[in-house]
Every structure is written in C-alpha cells, then in structure tokens.
Length: 222
Length: 200
Image 1 (cartoon, each protein chain N blue to C red):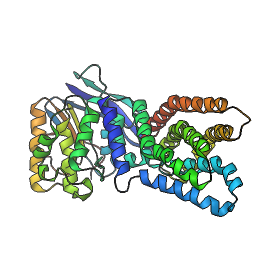
Image 2 (image 1 turned 120 degrees about the vertical axis):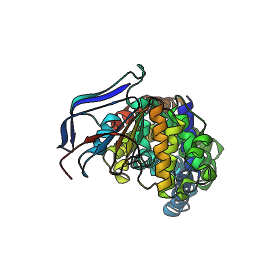
Image 3 (image 1 turned 180 degrees about the vertical axis):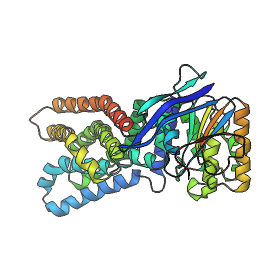
Image 4 (image 1 turned 180 degrees about the horizontal axis):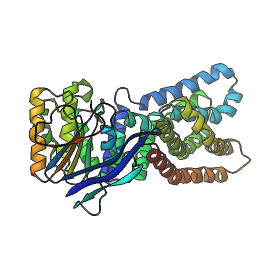
C-alpha cells in the first residue's frame, strides 16, 4: 500500500507542478466550451439544448489531451523499467497511475463544469446533472484510455495514435453520459436508467483497464 | 547466493545478439561484462532483470529469498536515470524508497553517502549528468537489494565519484551482495571478466 500511495502522490505532484498536465486539461476544456457559442451563435435555447453534449465532448477531448504521457514519460526516463521489476503487481500499479491521472486531470474538469455551464445557459439542475455524469463517467475515460496509453508505449508512437485507439472505446461512455444529462433536463426518459449504465461502464473499465494495460506493457518491453 | 545463466540465447528484432552464453557469480563477487559496442552487454543485463525474455536457456538465482523472483531482488542501474525533473532530489529518492519497498534506509543518509546532501531540495532538472548518476546510485543504497545490475555505472562520474562508487560497490560485496556490471572502464575493484562478442 505504501508503494501505491507513494506512486499516486508522485504523479499528482508532477501533474500540479510547472509543465504538468493538470492545468492544461482544464484550460483546453475552457477553450472548447468558450468557442462553442461563437460557432453556434447567440441562440440561448439552442445552447441550452446542446449544452450537455458540448460539455461532454470538451471533457472527453481534454482528458485525452494529457493521457498519452501516462506511461510515455515513465518509459522515456527509465522509470517504467524499475516499476515493472518492482514487487508491486503491475496491474495495481497501472490502476494507481490511472487513479492519480484522474485526480489530477479528470476531477478538475468536473469542478470546472458549473462555471462553464453558465456560459452555455444551463440552469442549476442541468449543470449539476452534467457535473454528476462527468464525475461518474470521466474515470471510465481515463481507465479505458490507459489501455491506449500502454499500447502507445509499446508501439513507440504517441499522440494521434492514442486518439485513434481510444476514441472508439469512449463512444458508449459519451452516449450514456449525454443521455443521462439530457434525461435530467428534458426527459422523457428517467435519469436513472442511462446513469446506471454509465456507472456500470465505469466499473467495467476499472476491472478491464488495469489488466489490459499491464498485459500490453509486459508484452511491449524491449 | 549464486546467480547463474546457462546456454542463454538472446534475440532482438529478429536478429541473434548472442547464443550459448554461460555465466556465474556468487555472493561477494563482481562480474564485469566486456565486449565491443553492440555485443549485447546491455541486453544481457536486461535479460537478468527480466525486462527481456530469453529466447533459449535459463537464468536463476539460488539462495535468495524463495518468495521473491529474481527481478524483485535486483537493482537495475541503466543508461536512463529514472528521475523526474519536476521533483526535488530528495523527493525523487524518497519516492523510489517508498515504491520499491523491502528493507530500506534513511534517504538523507544515502544522499550524504553519494555527496548530494547539499542539493537535497534542488529540483532534479538542475542537476548535472554526474550528479544525476550519483542520485541514481543513492537509490541503490536507500533500498537494499542483493543483486546489482549496473550498465556503464561510472559514466559521467568524476574521478572522486568513481572512487566513491568503487567503495560503495566494495561495501555491497562485503555484505554478501552480488554485482554484474557492463563496462568499458575498469570498475576499480577485483572482478571476474565475461567477454561477449568477438575481439574489439
């Protein structure tokens, strides 16, 4: 446990310091959402209707932005070698790294959502519904994205490859995240059904993500 | 404790690096791997560390802790330093001590042993190449592992650093440790030589 706690502390510390990824994700999220009213036009009703989808898309892209560094940075400076050799099972290490990444890069997006909801003319109920679905859904984005990040290390390609690998996997999360938010705002569906599926997607990713990432890292060592 | 490899064959990228290689080292003994560039010195260290898989043959450690695998009882000091530039010297070392676990000692004492105690609060980004190497060496001291795999350990170290490191290696051997080092320069201590590849 000390080992995992130490790893989470280290990753969060690096993310929060100069050059870390935490702030960049939030700034990107902010930029995407601020640009959207300029593109769509000042139609308040339309913005309200598109609001949840815009916030979800922004959060999805922002969480992808820093994900490719998840294992790449450790691979480049040799830390990954020592992590693989250590006495901590690689699956747990991967889970801890994903958790640290979500705390540093995913959680700030959820916190920023109420502020950005104002820009899209969302009322309090709608904003809190979107924030809640993001809170439940962004861990799934991180944990499935981690598989792509591990593959990117294996294949020695970062950036674009990660987006191509990960975006298709995140489609279900996007569908049910937006569906739950819409249900809370306009109906006619109940909020509970899509939200439960969103929770289930997150839980599945917690189980599958670490094992797939660890297997990919082991396979790709050279 | 005895580390031995039998009839090892190493293949990388579809090309055979070396084959039918035997080696052996016991507690208190250093093994120096020498050979021309590209002969497979680093590959052999990475095979022992479990970071590459052997194409044929076997590597085993007798007399170690039964519940732990060979990589788990091994320190690997590679070309890359495994240091995070954003963290301070002591944060880097403390992280590795906590993460690697097992039998550990005080990071401050380890830093003092490699002559970096004055720089403990400095971000690792500002260290020179030699200081980065010293910090990596401090990791070997902060966490106890019986087997040390060293890849060109004296690279970038100045003369006083080299003799300091030779002293640390001698201590490690005296406490029953075991060293396998890939090197071009003399290690500064008596070592058995294992030569890979043709004449340089």
